[in-house]
Length: 370
Image (cartoon, rainbow, N blue to C red; front, side, top):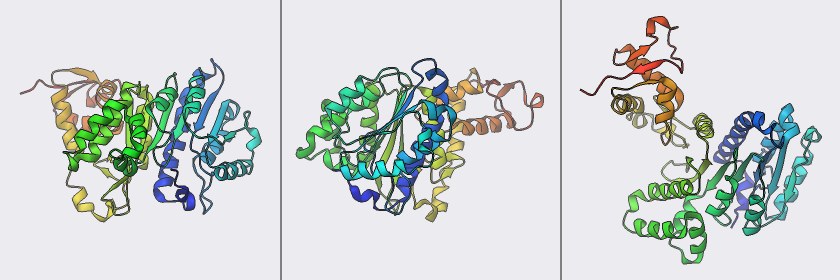
């Protein structure tokens, strides 16, 4: 069931979530628009569980942030098609009113569509009929009803179509062994994987969260979501996960862009490596947090994995970063350090480049293993 109390106040984690979606939408649209102009001359944003548009204290949620950014951009304002859906008629009425009050909303060539439907088979079939319109989908059901592999597979089927969805870990964790919601769990993980997951969880309680999220990521890859990136949200005390925001794409560029967006919204960094997590409690424990040094670890990993190889800096990044928290500047920083220590050979060498620079095209040779 939807939790309407979510919108009673603008909680920190909901603001972070809205910013991640809005920032990715902007970056995604800028990449997609040049090609979209040659096709249908349209891009789309679809939010299947849109809520009322504003929190009770007046703060804007995702739909309003998306529309405001579109109005401000000449291309987007002429190309963007938006569809917002919510099964709660109070939410759709509130959202429609909030949209109408946006300054200069008439600049959009396509008037935002607001629907009041239950997300199910009818919605999936409608999405499957959409062709050649690059679309960013946001699926935020607050629980699990309506969220399925079939739905996610439908929304990412075409070029330029990415999906961001809300994964309520607490409710799904409880729901996996609840026979009353077995069908929902089977729809989300796939029946065979859900059964296997239930067996695993019976004997590995300490690793429960890792097992569940890993199972979901593997299920998403099987339906074509080659690149999956979760962003974790912790509770106020920082000792328990509440939910994840999960990005799914068939394109590595989208994955790389989203990692940068999520890095910017992370609550903490270790040696410049983002946590890909919003944890309000981390500032309370700075000493413990700094004991782990991920850049030192990255140095050793690169020296081992690329031993006796010569690659450009961009090739090293592209071949290594998928499935890891490291962002591009982490690789640049580590490679500059290895160069300064004489552990790698660069072409052009350090004395032929500007200080502290390492272009994407610089060739890097790693020594053979000792």
